[in-house]
Length: 92
Image (cartoon, rainbow, N blue to C red; front, side, top):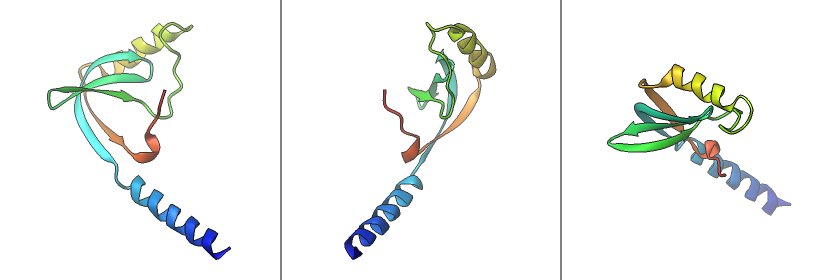
């Protein structure tokens, strides 16, 4: 039981440490892929950014093109700041 408690405390500490190790990116939006994905130019490199907490339809789904167009109107050519952290990672 003590080992389980120690392991739980250690894991919690590791996760809290990793969560605080995020990075911030600032750049200009150069394209919008769909309603929740855009590309930002950071130091002459295009970075793909997926927006956390947004459940937008894919481009080939109903309302997908409208979703993409709406995001593009909001951010195209704008300078944006994005925070990327451990818990925000998303794999497809």
